[in-house]
Image (cartoon, rainbow, N blue to C red; front, side, top):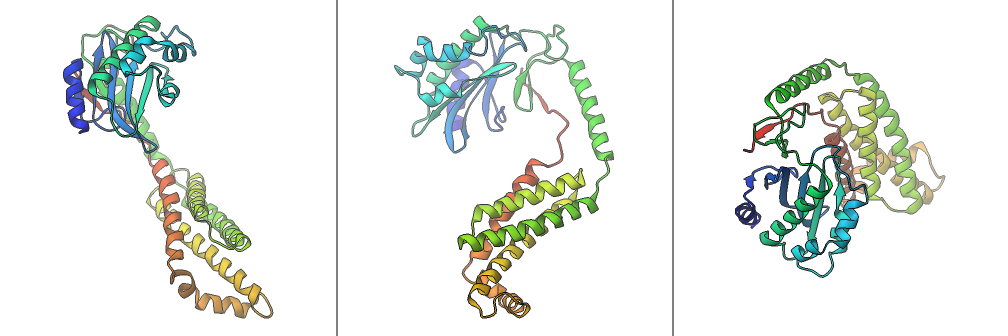
Length: 327
């Protein structure tokens, strides 16, 4: 369905349908009166929306930070394009003024905005950009020199950049990548940071669970996040060893916290309270107590979610920009 909407929008606007736009998925992109634009039906935080980007020459915006907000609130043309007497509040709040463009997100619940309506909104946004900023026209956005080359998609964003600038950026990316690869990693520091953090978090996890008499699963995510962040800081440059260490220490920390929770709970009921004998007995029956009802597996799963998120965010940097000719 989305692809059909993009094809129809492409027919209405003369823009080109591309497999990857600024929001990673399919989009239509091109230039309207010298302003590079991109439009797609996307999702953000589980909210479906039509997203429109209109780019202008960097630093040329003259309407001030409040100009876009005033336009969105008062534009009769925009309301007519949307087909409503008043714009949805979520749409009004979504307008963003970027360093070199403006962004509009049109949220919807059941029925997506039709391509005809999205094309009308895009036309209004470009008209407003013409009044408040300069178009990119035929100047390279890198060096400012005039270029007859068509638009390029730079990691999904429509830009106008000349061949020398693309070559220069590729060379800078190559040098930055070589410098990153030459960086030394410090696995011992990562291990020590991880062990210290894991010990503190295990006691905190077990103690808090004992005080509130239940396992707080979001705490398991927090353990994964904290351990991954700490190990990354210690190692400085994370490699495969650091990633494996993060996963193993996360699992070990959650298991240790679960063990302490069960031990503290048992000590409250047992005669003589906390003792080595009780600790040994709890260790003997730990798997049966912690995993028989499935709660232990859920804790481990949540912890791995947290660690996985940080490992994804802190993955090795990407230096090269992928350029695709848009025409």
